[in-house]
Image (tube, rainbow, N blue to C red; front, side):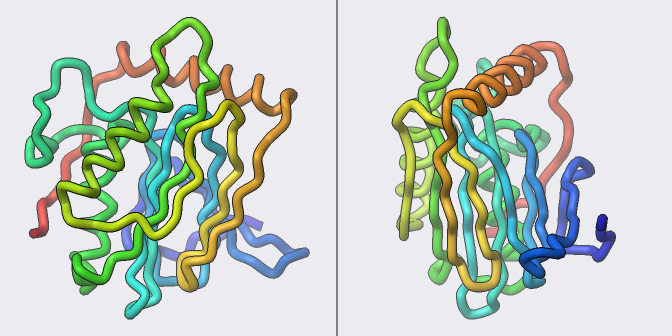
Length: 207
């Protein structure tokens, strides 16, 4: 059953539904999505070479997730402040967007709990995008003074990740060969689209 209850902020493609068997509200994220909530929701995504950061304020019981394909757009300067107007399909903007959503709702930077997932080597014939994503997100968090509380990154298999936004609990399931092909095909299409689609969207910076 689809739900329309508003969250803090969300992208248009985020879909929310009720899992009748588990009694859970599930919010599904696709590549390029970024979502934060103070509701009792489970944020759900599937990652191949993409990386997702799950960031939470334990004090406010509020958390969010992003899902990005590349660290930054081709030719973008290596500057964490140079992200205004960049789409959240790129890591630099996706990280700023998620952190800012939480800070704008009262979270403190020094209390943020960060967990990172994904970055598998699943795309054949291109550079190791997964490794680039992992190195990017680790360096970003180090520069921002944010510690990684937990991670499951690298290797060669995709992951199904479920993040319980209020409690901070995460369930990770590694996917088999059949689903790996599906994830690889989806990421290949998304990667091709990055070169064709204009970068859009804007963010506000909270420090």
